Image 1 (spheres, rainbow over the protein chains, first blue to last red):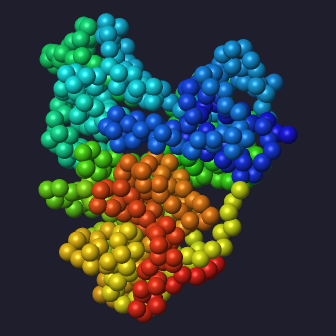
Image 2: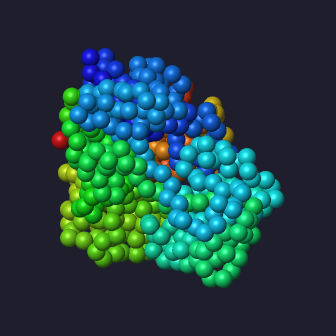
Image 3: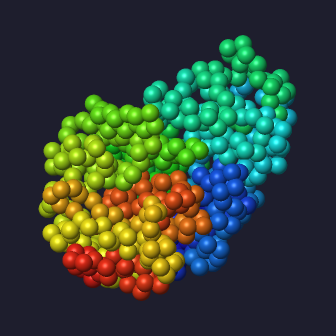
Length: 410
Length: 152
């Protein structure tokens, strides 16, 4: 009987379990879960604070999932080392787990820069896990002034999540705009405006130089007094377990299209990996849930002796604030076509007869048709791209292509 | 653990579609939970789970294809989409309206309801219609409910 070990218990791990069981119904699966919880939807922690979901609804899988999958979970345990020659994972309680196939689904961890005086701040939080969200929830009151360091996806979703529950929310970021990893200045300002309309204040191009208790002294010379501090500067892939045994690691654990790492019988999936981005034609850390899910399942199938490839990863983000949605996909390469109104913005990036990426704000209808053009590398010359520019539609495909798409099972 | 993929699905013959949009109204009515079509639809914006695409030359109805490897299910950040017995379903109480499924569906088959919660074609298996209302009400038999193999 084959022994599988999965380190981590997020979405990539759950999908890895499902992948294994799609091939092997009898092998022994053990999951090492540092968090004391069954798999939950991590991107929903801000929605939890906003009251749009709760602890039951935000479970990723139904109760009894691990039993149904005949899978053992070691809660509250951490893997400390991999003995690759013995094929054994060492746990923090000294126990060893032998494996025939191992999956690293270790996710990522908040990156906290060495701010001066950070230790003097009484109430400070990260915003990565459900426990982080629950601790933050305990700390905030109607009268709280909250300072969030980082205007990226995590920081801003946190801001939206707590806005109605506190007195004020201020977000600062070293970058000169919000969501700087996925939006340029024009697009970012649309999202920023919506957030400001809902009472969130910004200090951009500015960062905390030092903290003095409940005061942040900014590089600009300004000071911000706050009651609660949230640090959402960035995240880093958890790669240490593989790095220290000489496995290939860049910004994430390097994986091939089968989710194999450079070390025999060790696979990896999810936010801890660096895999192929087909839109950019290079490796990238794609720390997004769809990727974790598809990589996890692929890893599981291959660990169990099946054959599955995942080679269609690319950046994808659908993020909304107070009803205004921004969707981004692929790489912003080549020339772009733009349509802009007061309330919406569309940018389609094209290069070498291909759609490479897009940004859509407030015009998200059927966006997946654009995404599919990037993913399938559909030549622009094979579709009515002028029609496609007006709005994503399968009517822009040729009749023959449409028959393929709609005439039978897909 | 893979379910049997041979099952009936909704297909459209675009050469027969008149672009009359009746399927959209029949869909909205079937999923309204009301027994009176006038009460359900008159004077209200409708949120059908099927929609007509195309223009002057060609038109056709699009609804969920219930894909073999559904990318919407894999991508759902709320674990709200799932596939049961070949049918892709949405647990609306879990949906947070992030629209990730809209961002990934290659057919443009998903759209939110009036409250921003996603809804999708579940082949009228969850309502009292019994068979897909779009198919039943199509005046030109352009929409059919049948078993087919892969597309050409």
